[in-house]
Image (cartoon, rainbow, N blue to C red; front, top):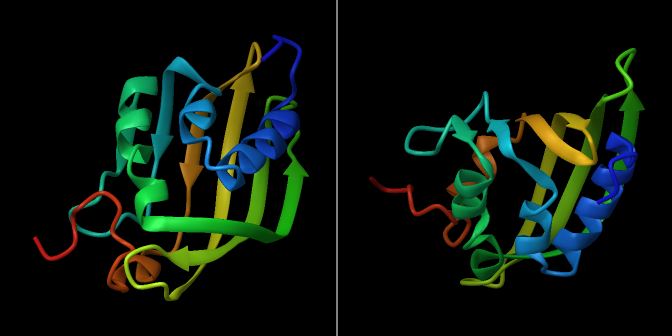
Length: 142
């Protein structure tokens, strides 16, 4: 993305890439040294991913397990730091394995610099991955 791309632009573009099942392109929005954290990660799930390669490994199997279809609620709040935004959103879709409905609420804090995401904290609800077929990192039941 151009270096003058705002964090809000990256967020909106990234959500559309996820809906379009373009996971690799979503990963490419991250800087090589980007860090993605999951403060509420359940046991067996990563709490911190360091670097674009780790983020890519984490997301690689997401579309094989979750058929993301919509973000019916998106609220982006700009912070006093122009490179950082807080996103409140809801994702909906189907679990590929069971065809059960998937619904997850998120709050994310994202920071971008020079047209790439450099930091993120994803406060997703770990209860959502307790459904059969939702565990896209292969950690459930360990």
